[in-house]
Image 1 (spheres, protein in one colour):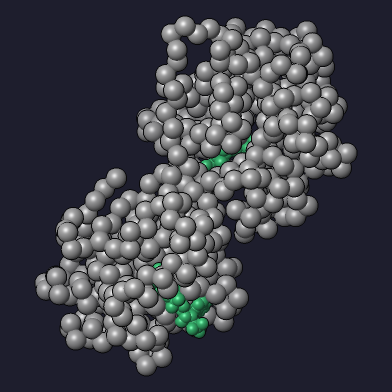
Image 2 (cartoon, rainbow, N blue to C red):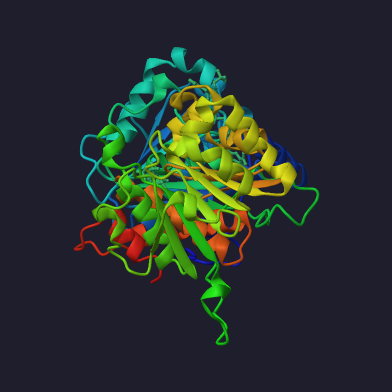
Length: 521
Ligand SMILES: NC(=O)C1=CN([C@@H]2O[C@H](COP(=O)(O)OP(=O)(O)OC[C@H]3O[C@@H](n4cnc5c(N)ncnc54)[C@H](OP(=O)(O)O)[C@@H]3O)[C@@H](O)[C@H]2O)[C@@H](O)CC1
Ligand SMILES: Nc1ncnc2c1ncn2[C@@H]1O[C@H](COP(=O)(O)OP(=O)(O)O)[C@@H](O)[C@H]1O
């Protein structure tokens, strides 16, 4: 964790860390009101402006110019306050402000900060200065958690123009509270506020105030907000769990738990069996997907499962695919595998063939990771869906690992709908099927029926390549087989999967099989 210019009298700004609680905007408002009640008037905005100014100075120590785009609400107020603080601390730096609303129409707190910026000698400009250089800084204080998605189609042109300019800045951009236009609860932009170019031009930082929200970490949040910083504005809100006066978090950031050291007196039976069923062969439809099942098995092997069995859904089992390229992996005919005794990973590359085996697996497997075509088969057949939901009553545990399209099929909606409410969609699936559900994608969400969800903070777009989901399914199976709960295995697998991708050496080609083989490192 990084601490900036520590000072006893100032709040500390930290890089957002794993395990931290995430609150929705409603809870954030309540926390804000509670804090405002016990502090002298205007203190929160003053602290927000100061925290922004301090982070700005740390991010751009050589800036000759700092341009601050201030919106019509209190987010804009934080911007004016930061401008006043910066002007007082950096007399030789040009501090420029652009505003979208006349000062007498600003909220009361923002009006006070507007006057402070005026008195400090900050210069007002109409638009982003053309000479903003790479060492300079843009502060985006246009829209914070007060964004109203339903108003976005009528957003005035001046605000839209400034928003676009902040997005096109080649210098670093520091967003106050959240990237403007992004919904803090869902991590999605309303269509009319969506950026014209998908990737921001320059480096991005976001200073979250008082609380962290799910939208910073999932959906479009990661790209929009960049590096997330957090400042509690001196209100001492590190964890929302122990203090009952603080509203309940909506989720937590996933945690990096190191694997427990293995006991010396252990053997392969101590670390569980993983049995993979999948991989429709070429002979059925001319579409081979055996690689997917191999990837899941390979991941389970390298993630430390005691024994790994692989049952390929290939009609020509006696062909070359029965020769294991990894001799540690035991090949089986699906009919020869005892599905009652292992942690089962089912569906990777399963094609149409997997549906024939699902009634047996849904009934017999004590621990089942259902992925890919296993999920598609359930979505297409109400009888299988009923059988899946009945597993929980028989105390058989299941992990579902859909990507957004698979989740959409299971909930009979569109992938766009799933993406617009990732947290909610994942919770709905967990409830509907009484399963731990892991909704994949940038900011993977993990939800179980009776506990708070997690959002995975590791990973990057290296993972956006075929087969990495199969690796994740195998990894979950291996961790589950080694004694974790379904939820722990899912949370830890998502974190480790992402971490390996983050730490991947730049000069080494990345592929799903290479990822699988590095899981044990
Ligand atoms: N919470 C905290 O912990 C603390 C909060 N603080 C700060 O306050 C911020 C929240 O301030 P906020 O409530 O004034 O909301 P904000 O984000 O400025 O937006 C509201 C303005 O935007 C407008 N507007 C909205 N949607 C629009 C659209 N689609 N298109 C166009 N306009 C739209 C809306 O217009 P109106 O509805 O009034 O017409 C209104 O003028 C928070 O993010 C943080 O920075 C800190 O000071 C202290 C600690
Ligand atoms: N941009 C990204 N950031 C983080 N994780 C990603 C990103 N793109 C893909 N992933 C991860 O990669 C995996 C892809 O899984 P999936 O879509 O099922 O692929 P496949 O079916 O080819 O194996 C998931 O774990 C997903 O969360």
